[in-house]
Length: 363
Image (tube, rainbow, N blue to C red; front, side):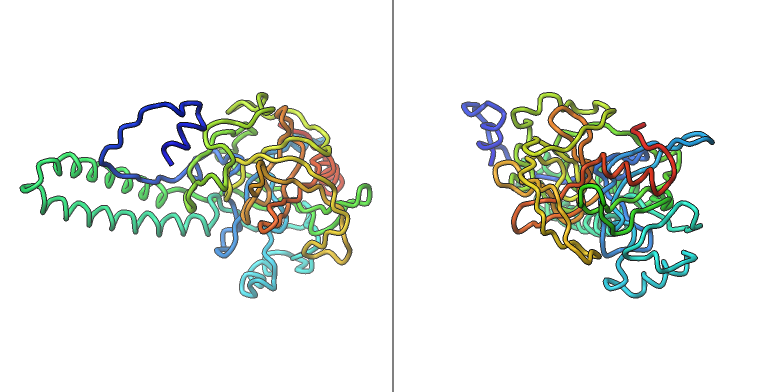
């Protein structure tokens, strides 16, 4: 493992001394006040599913402009067949419950569906893992305290263990006190399809609180997830971007939109699989997605070097081309085949404009 990391950074001949120590996994940036692209989100009351906050768009009209977060309709609107309890909960908050599952929500329907970031599921799992981590470290500390007289080197290990426990406890308390309320649902596409190019439309706009609104920064660094180990299977290159992605610079602002084209080299930052790279392989004309009575035509992305481009929980992620332009919205995938379905962002923004009656651009 150490050799592979050295090799991937161009240091295959580097001498590495292996010392006694520990490995501690901390959470990533899901608990930042400014909700960033690639973080998790879900309806507050839903604990059985999660999705990704892709980024932000601006809606402009005669009365001014506002910025909204973007994800997928199926991420923020639970399916009644998955959980009847939550379906009835949402039905009580929307004047016309028939919009649930498959039909769009327009801005004038008076809904009040709260969205949490991090998602309820991700937050719960993180808190459980942190609790278990604390108990494990405490047990190690007790054992080290018993050994300290007979093993002199134990003193340094004990100091490191106590320092680690302090940091984990601080992380736990920060997450416990974090205000996860992000905003409310503004509008969604429902499950529909484009009459122009025949692709599925599956987007959602979230009216994010001004104090929690982030931006559209590029993320190319592999960050540790709070609920999954980062492996080479999930991220093609841990430290280096693949060739042809020189325009993707960490923290650069995504401020332009481009057409999604075949053979495009693309990248995305999703909640579950983090930063991944791939290529637009072909258009599949016989896709049968949930909520659709007929087949749709979807752009298919295959992951770099045969690895999956996305996992369940990445829906809603923004997809960038190798020049750093926003090109698509990730809506679905087939993990067993390593393929993902991406909707051209131009088609998504065109539909947003029709549903909301506002001009849609990047902030």
